[in-house]
Amino acid sequence: MPTPRARDAGLRRITSITGWVAAAAVSAAALISFGVARASSTASKATTGTGTGVTDPGFTGVEPDDPLGTSGSTGLQPPANPPTQGIGSGQVVSGGS
Amino acid sequence: MMRPSASGSFRALGTSAKVVALDPEALPDAIAAVRHEVAEIDRACSRFRPDSELARLHAGAGEWIEVDPVLVEAIDVALRAAILTDGDVDPTVGEALLLVGYDRDFAGLDPDGPPVGALRAAPGWRTIEVDPAGSRVRIPRGVRLDLGATAKAFAADRSARAAVDNTGSGVLVSLGGDIAVAGPRPRGGWEIGLADSHAAAAEPGHTVQIDAGGLATSSTTVRRWLRGGRQLHHVVDPATGRPANEVWRTVSVAAATCVDANVAATAAIVRGEPAALWLQRLGMPARLVRTDGSIVRTGGWPLEAAA
Image (cartoon, rainbow over all chains, first blue to last red; front, side, top):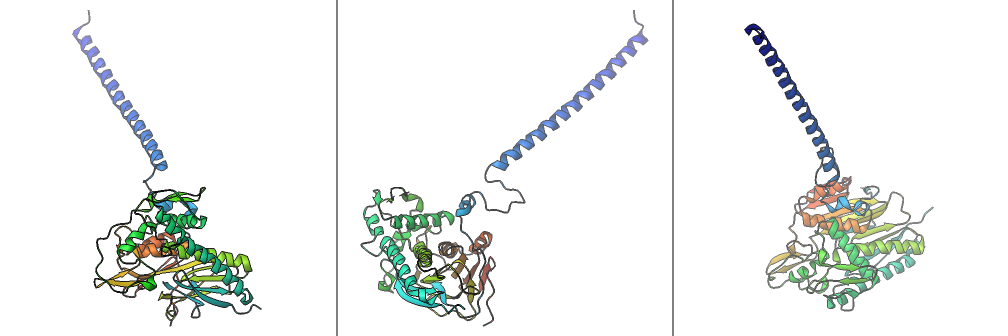
């Protein structure tokens, strides 16, 4: 039959072990949550990257809801070279008609 | 050494046509080619000729009508313009133009008249059905097309190409100031003056040179008339059926084709203030003149030379 001193020592060991187990569980839960959140974030980016209507700060094109953005080479085409300053009065005049 | 170019003019599409050939000897054949192309477009697309293919399409509204392939192509060009401008250049404004009083060739239009009645938005380009393989088109009853915003430029592009194919000479074609160039070019490029009206002399110092493609100008200062004492003009906003608000009095655009230049210029008039940013984002060289005469340039459009 254990003495009261031995019983108290046993209880203290059990309490200590329980504390360590609880701390480890909390740490594991935190690590798992972080991993899930990170994976979820990556999946979300992949989705928006292939969807429409979402742009990133580096986006320099035309918004996807603009028909020009989906018509590619059939969009309004600028000239190969912009006009240059003329030197005379012009062979013809461009104006409203 | 290349000799100076030669030019000839004639009336077409309710306006003046001018053909410039880099090789003077090619001018007669170039003019003949342009005349032929323009006549084809007029016979297909005129909303004032009772014998046009467009008139026949209007008469058969509600049914699939087999029409000349030239009209199918012209409608296709107009629909592309509508798509690319989000409906700001829309061929279904025909009824709206009638309602604001533009109901005949402009030369015969009464410059003054009673107030116009209720105006309404254009029914929209999505109401038009095209069957290119069968050369057929169907428009709903009550819808009237006006291809004026694109047909002249379409004719200029086609004419310039045809003239080069026929002659081998470099050619410039101007149809009421909608300009297309093709083939070899003069040294420095084709010299084009700018003005509110194509019939006016170029504003001093306001000339540019282009080496290919097209240049077109849209303006609210021409084709104006009075109804009920109110000034109206021919650039109708499809969203309202009314003449577009006059933010820009004249917009000139250079593009890879005359059609694209004209579509961009007309859309800019309709869009008003946001048009400058729109053209800049598209990289389109443009010169936009406000009603007060101040000028905004986009896409590398050059500064005016000192007059």
